[in-house]
Image (cartoon, rainbow, N blue to C red; front, side):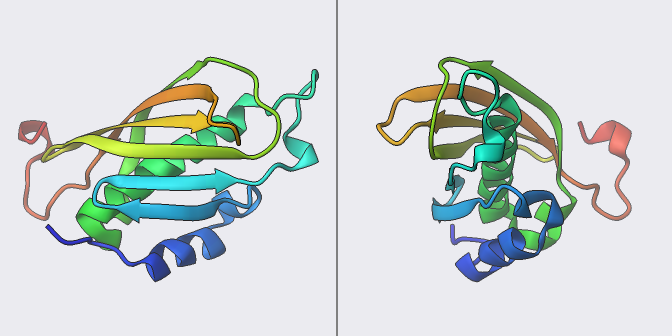
Length: 147
């Protein structure tokens, strides 16, 4: 299998998507069904106690999993795929930059399952995420029978 997306396409999504610009996400690496993103620390990410707030982890995990999906199905179909479920386990408080590693566990006809983990700069595990994405319907298909 070959990659269904280029680095340029992923970089373009980071640069042009308003819903991700505010985080300053950086693409570290990607391959079939995998993606690693970095979130450079910003003071605005701090919650009381000086740790990075939860929505930052959830946003980077969701995006990293989505990018991993796109490596398998491409931009056209991937742009229409949406998160239907995102579960997050907060394991430890983190300070500073965050790295998120995502991978796809199952690429189904209608549903896609993925996982992600966020770590601090020393590799300490901070969060664990599971996600389900739904793939868009093919023209002429019956969505009731494609689950």
